[in-house]
Figure 1 (cartoon, helix red, strand yellow):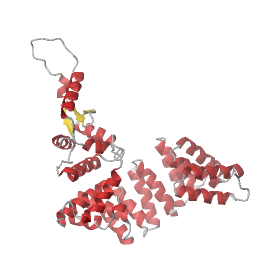
Figure 2 (tube, helix red, strand yellow):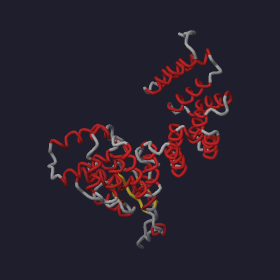
Figure 3 (cartoon, helix red, strand yellow):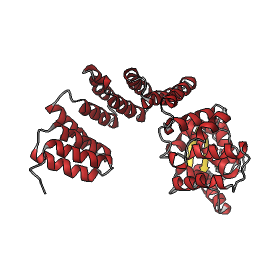
Figure 4 (spheres, helix red, strand yellow):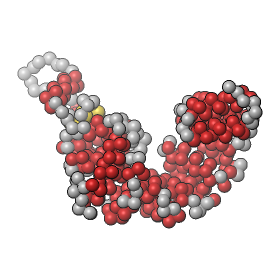
Length: 373
């Protein structure tokens, strides 16, 4: 029921509070009600756009941001929101122009806006562009730990581990409670083989700080090896409980790591795959010559689920990576490292993540998949 005594600003505040609580449906109701009374309130159109964006209703979000910009062509939040939507539609050049407009209009001192734009670009894999906005934020607020940490994340994705580690350490100097930066730094140091330093940082987090299993597996391994803790040590129980909590429903990686069961059925299925892969030919007394394509460097593996994956070693790993919601769009190296680490954590079997072929062959030796050719 409408309340004519509320101003457009009050509608915006109510919707914003609901949005922050993740109550997007309720926020939409408030915004629609407000717009029915104040159709020219720019902030309400902008709020509607972000609520639609959060619900992944990109076409409707774009319409809301467009309407806001008709009312105020220089509204910074509308420009940033429009840019995010355009990225979702694959219109990168148009998105970058919208983002650039915020700088042209002089909004670089809006640190949260710069970080918002940088994160949107980062999520879509435009790391160099994201880095530029993170660096603008640092230039404007050099003591902002979050901005400095974001530069560190971008540098890592760009292959500059030294610069990344330096930025993350700087962020922690500015804010010792910046847990995300500390966990990221711990994982980075682990990848570089600096295990004692990695343990120092990972051990200063709590189980609830982690939203990814990798850091927990690494911390458990380091605690056991450095502190000589037994597998059933009470100190490890909270971390193991968090792993169980994060695991939830099995995902593509869990399926990949699942132990092969019903071996006879798997053999029969592989025989069926082989029969389907080679077309029937007339029976002759001459030995069959393998098709020439078998020597082209292409391979086939069968996962524990029975799915066939074809391609070069690199293509196969890429396809396995793409099948995982957790790692789709992320570097293949991240995927291989995570699978190898989880398998080691569960069984103690090591899988090389140095290159695609070693990873596939190691996964086959560990029983995670079968190489057909």
